Image: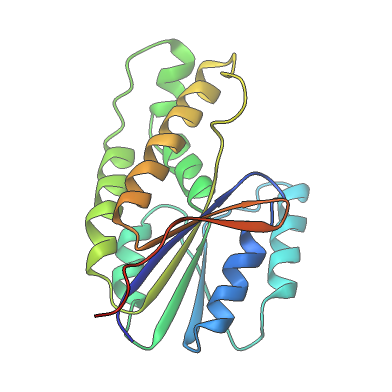
Length: 190
């Protein structure tokens, strides 16, 4: 099976994770779920538990909150489907692990090497990976411009990251109300 990189976008509770999980099951490959969430409060712990409960027991699960490109390189294989859920939480982790959020809050120019290095590494890494990689991300750009500087920074960077990832993926799907809309499809096999 040729390598495949797929991005699934959608709003909150759009059905994007369910679609990603279905596509991972349908791949016929060994599946490893890469979780980027940090259960820092009770509400997030419940979300994580919900996602865990609906995944098949034979799927592997790896938590990676910051160094996603490196972990993808370690785990990718021709017989494996890697499901990353989600880029949105990964981006948030990067912005808060570095100084970007603090700088935005203070009104300063943003200089966050961790964020810059990791997002660039993801874009460089994706085209090189064997197997099937499915990335889930939130589409956050359809609302009003947020009032808070950190929220504006996040919305801007999420939009930029989604564009960059979509450019290097073979397939891009937008999910709304549980319905997938194909935005980019792989070229037909020769």
